[in-house]
Length: 222
Image 1 (spheres, one colour):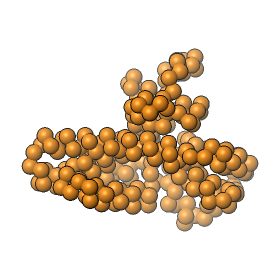
Image 2: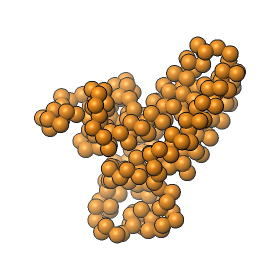
Image 3: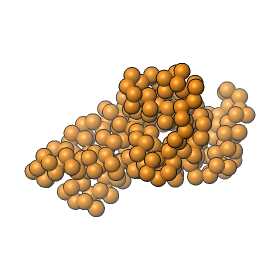
């Protein structure tokens, strides 16, 4: 991406890293929530609320932050397509909009099977998690621990599902549906199917691809 080995290290990560970082955090937050609430029922309800908040956040960020200017996306894609294998991408892009789009999301659309860039690097996820934590603390006070635990669990589910649909053949009907749902966003229409871990918000907000499966999708069992 950059033509600089040091900067390049911050753009990819092993898919196990988010789980190593955030599973202990979820456990700690649930413990703090239990100490603050003293009710398992409330903790469970707040945790579920956090996962719902994550699913909406995932949809909103994907739709309104990563896909905001089709002309910028197309120009960045054309610039990448014209490069040789050993040419760095960022210097070839025109302006900060193309650079932002490519770093944030375009690299995944142009190289969707790059396993090193299917989960969020800690250099991005940790500052964002910190910001959301303090936002929840400000809004919800003691309720924030369990809500944020659910929010982080939703994020981990997103990373896990995203990696899985790109690198494995799902064995369950729901897994196959999520793979088809996400691949239609990648390969057929990037203006639809913004949810990765859930199609719910696409259905609610009118961006769900409702076409019947193609012959190829049926043949491949997607």
